[in-house]
Image 1 (cartoon, helix red, strand yellow):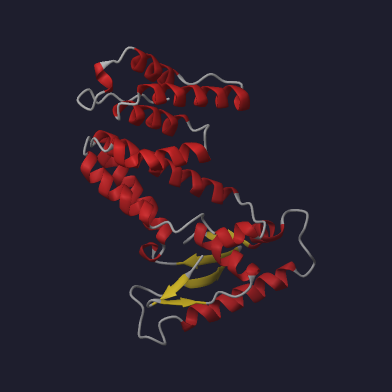
Image 2 (cartoon, rainbow, N blue to C red; image 1 turned 90 degrees about the vertical axis):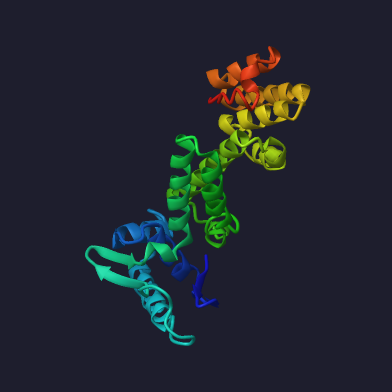
Length: 260
């Protein structure tokens, strides 16, 4: 997590201070109850007697950091973020345009809408811009310190969804060769996501690698059976059958999508 003020990275303090800001940004412009903040910072059973005081100190420190932004290099673009006390807790008031995560969600949503309308070129640009905002795992510094918030899992899932939308757009544009390395990497990292596995199988087939495509399907099926006790979804099975039959619908001109 970084706070950037006119191109200058601003120090955010210790781990509790960073975690407080991180969670409030995940719930930006919403009031988060103090009791909930204490739970996410220490866990339900691990809250020390001094937790409220530590949280108050973290809030005070963050306000000092935020109040100093824009003063050294002139006013920052857009309104200055504010950490407000609002019963029953706190709210981080911030312009969404200043937070990469919110720009990501907006652009990814717009790209998904373009894709649904059949505008693969427009969708590809928007989704590429959304994914380019990522520099690595979300709030990696907090995760390395042991934080496991459900909100972080939801953000990671949203990124994977956007990547799959981007792959669909690129497949529709005939860019199967260009995305093949990224697809292979994604499937290695998460072999149980049937959608991207199907995209890899289709990309391999369109690259003239029918045997490799069928081998990829076999690996997906084996992973699903071994880890979940499930057969591949109907869409993935249809894709395998279409490859075996060399169905013309699999060509770019056919442009049929085989969803799991």
